[in-house]
Image (cartoon, rainbow over all chains, first blue to last red; front, side, top):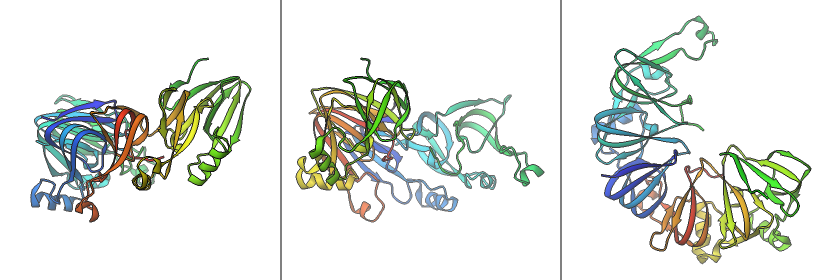
Length: 212
Length: 217
């Protein structure tokens, strides 16, 4: 299986011995050995139906396949990398937060519904499932906050990076006349997670796109 | 005299004294103590011939001559600073834009890309956005390099050449030969490439500095 390790906090090193991984298009910064880079086809391994769903949801994701022998180094705009080990569970993340995926992992689109619209997240998020390692990027180091049935967690949608486990997501709003007048506290909409799992949060609030 | 000292990842403290003068990117001074003067320098320690070469090459990043007695803090654009010490054995190749500060004792030169790889070298410079010329530093002394997100040092050995994304390349040192490896296919021509059509292939023995980002300065 491909070995994912961190080289510093902003660079991901992956040791390959003939395996295939998937990574964000153009994220290679250096490599040693023999590597081939191939952009994934229109369907991205998700089938025709998956590609159609992705197109409708606007959850654009361009990945490339990396195959070879040696070590490949991946990074994106000096963002911080976090490794997530999946053992049959499902990771939900924004498509722009995914840096690299083990070849065994499957991706798909998960519809969030209308509530994604108000937060600029779009209608859908990407789900990653299977066994293997996924690397996600965040603006500043991401922390994993634990959610237990006793302690639900609320996060700012703009600081949300991804979540893992058996979690229910809903939106809490605190919109009042001040918000309407443009005098709100800037914290009128939050995501609330209930159940058992982890939520990854970054120390920056993005305005639609990742920006340093 | 103590050497360059990083205050944090993005700020560098440099001691200046008699016999220890430095050249720095113009406007990169953040603070200083003591009687220190900053003079714009057209030649950046290269002499008239070098200056002429640089002007022709377009490889002119405005530099200033820093001298006096004291300590100076340097930084630029919130970029990470990496100190590279040269012991006289090898030459550092770096783009002028990425050079924050260097000792006046270092010999500065401009290398024509064509010297390494002829026409292919020139094509390489044009494709990678490095231009036709690159700056060389040699001798005894230190220099500070700018990068977006910090650099990683990758060793290059004759058995193991290293391939680097031209946008993530910062500098290299040692007995290294570089050439442009092209793996562009039909998919790249129709705009459906993997974004990795061009790589710098570095072989020989030395070190290459790579940044964790594809952003040029």
